[in-house]
Amino acid sequence: MKQFLITFLCFGLWQGISAEGFDHKHLVWDSLLKKYVKNGLVSYKGIQSEEGTFRQYLDNLSKVSESQYQGFTEKEKQSFLINAYNAFTVKLILDHYPVESITEIGSPFSKINLARGIPWKKEFFTLLGKSRHLDWIEHEKLRKDFNEPRIHFAIVCASIGCPHLVSEAYTASALEKQLQAAKLGFLKNPKKNSYDKTTNTLYLSKIFSWFQTDFTKKTTLIQYVQEGFEEPIKPDAKIVYNEYSWDLNELK
Picture 1 (tube, one colour):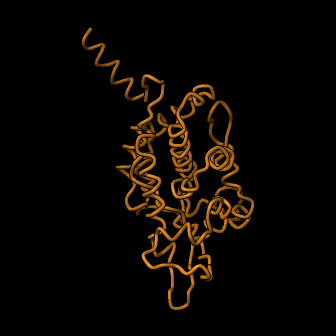
Picture 2: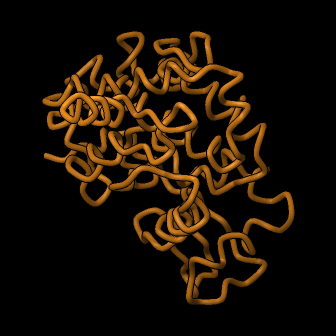
Picture 3: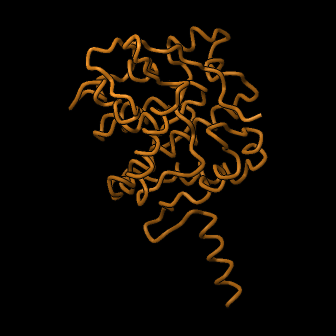
């Protein structure tokens, strides 16, 4: 009997089962991230080597029903969706691995794939009971259901130009701290964002251009990004958007 209980508990942990029917600590995904993500770069081969474990986590995400999801708290929903976006993005890369860029997925022409958003509109996983694509998670759920622009620093499209994929899963209990760290980490990265005081020029990631309306609902764009800069940014600063690198964020 004792051995049976031990086996049952271990199986429950493996399946990600909690009292609510889902592991809101995302322990399996957290373990993979800690092992195979360093400084925002991903060892896709490493995750591929644990295909069974990775697939089990994805299956657990896919098993969550719409009604079950509606019973989650707001932070549990956000964490669930952020982790799902990042994990299924990794799956998309592994499904076509090796690739040098996510933009290679779709037609043979990267520029066409990028212009049409083909990789992000490809339905290749199930979430909340239906076949979904990555754009659905980002635009129909995260951006639409939550007034939280910091999600743009948490979801990662497998590219160097993106924010770093952090080496831990997002969880409801730590979400506020994690989102703030993601925002500041991205803003303080001089390869992504910088300010030239002498020319009064603010160089920003194109993320701030693509989703400017998300960042300026309550303030100006300059005021929003100021938190990440020690140097005061003049309100009349010229904004220049940096070229975005779509090279794969692979750890080699």
